[in-house]
Amino acid sequence: MLHTRTTPAERRRAFRARLASGELLRMPGAVNPYSARLIQEHGFDAVYLSGAVLSADLGLPDIGLTTATEVAARAQQIARVTDLPALVDADTGFGEPMNAARTVQLMEDAGLAGLHLEDQVNPKRCGHLDGKSVVDRAEMVRRIRAAADARRDPDFLLMARTDARGVEGLAAAIDRAKAYVDAGADAIFPEALADEAEYAAFRAAVDVPLLANMTEFGKSPLLSARTLTELGYNIALYPVTLFRLAMGAVEHGLRVLAAEGTQESLLPGMQTRSRLYEALGYADYAAFDSAVHDFTLPPDA
Ligand SMILES: C[C@](O)(C(=O)O)[C@H](CC(=O)O)C(=O)O
Ligand SMILES: [Mg+2]
Image (cartoon, rainbow, N blue to C red):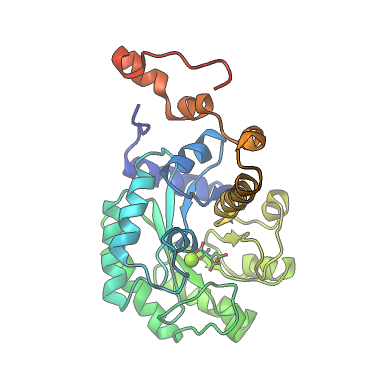
């Protein structure tokens, strides 16, 4: 019941240990707290809170309109219902280096296992769009140092994302990643790499855990978990996959409902009531107090 049995500190330690093991952790982005439960149930290793998903969820473009407290509040709702470690997209840290420091403490308090900060200017944009700008390396180093110093739990993972590949080229992105590790980043997120050779070049140059962003319809190829394992990557990120799937289903459903005047033909594609109740663990609540769940579902529910 209530779903978690672990503390944030335990999840952070476990995340660190898995990242050190050399295996590939598969990390889908949650669309909401409930989907974080499903991510865990389906055997994935970690949960992501995507800035792109959160802003789209609010009906906004992903251009840095969300605030640190808004993101922390949603991240806390997600971290609270899963025993998996949760990594949150903290964009540019929501302002100056001191804001990045405060963001770290907000996310620690929200029970996250870690966050990533990127080297884009404010306002940022999706890493797979053209026309990005990055702050100079010294500025990003200040951002990372401030974030690292703010951390109270040394196991809270500080990941630095560099968007420089699309702006300054691969060699500059690798140089920046090295400088970010020297400044205190525990892991690196090289954004929008073009092909497998670039993934391999990053792996050869950087010693810390690396994340591969397998976002759809972007600039990077969709590499399989097997390929990413062979390339020596530590995290395969599927940030917006569940959101795109869900919204595809929503649009399909709206079209069919409007055309047919009934949802009858949509039923086979729906998560059933009984599956929903199973995933939410109704039976456990009933065991606690039979009054909570004292009904029988119809056979086709
Ligand atoms: C990973 C990302 O930062 C996100 O917010 O999920 C996005 C994903 C996307 O827009 O496809 C990004 O890569 O910038
Ligand atoms: Mg983002």
